[in-house]
Length: 241
Image (cartoon, rainbow, N blue to C red; front, side, top):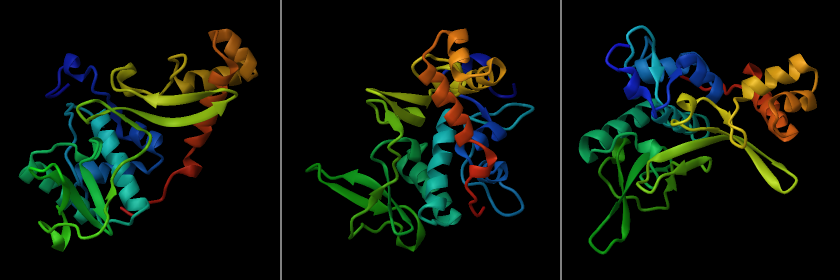
């Protein structure tokens, strides 16, 4: 396992590039470039895990990648700005995985900012990328934050809600938690993988039959099927590398 022993992988989540691409609905080649670089350009950040025979990323890497997806897809931020900002977060401010932390990374136009506080505990924002590096924000910035993330008290991400749907008076969720099944997606209410319930609905012939087989609510099977449909390749984001 290269530089990582099996015990060190527990609680950190682990995904092949193909798995991460499937769960994030992006192309595998993009993740490969963002983490390892290719002929098109340098990598954006280094993966947390090092295995001997396979390229993999951790849960924190995965969350960082989701942020990059949003920055590229929604805000059209150039990769060089993202790369520059991450390096500045790490080298100048000593902050690793800045996009996996609450109230740290912010964006104005296509420039990344870090939130800081002075002695009076007033917030101010300093640019960490582009030509504005080191300058204070003069206008309102937007936090690089996804509402589907749950954070720990220390501000680091705890788990990611990948999919949710209301059923009567409750909400069913698909979550990725690094301390459960190495971060594999799970139906939160029953702890079974969506793929398992999805395949059971096919082999058993119906959602109800699959629910009886695994002794779960039909809603658990339903959201599992909807989630797998949501991840089909035809819905993948097409983002410029």
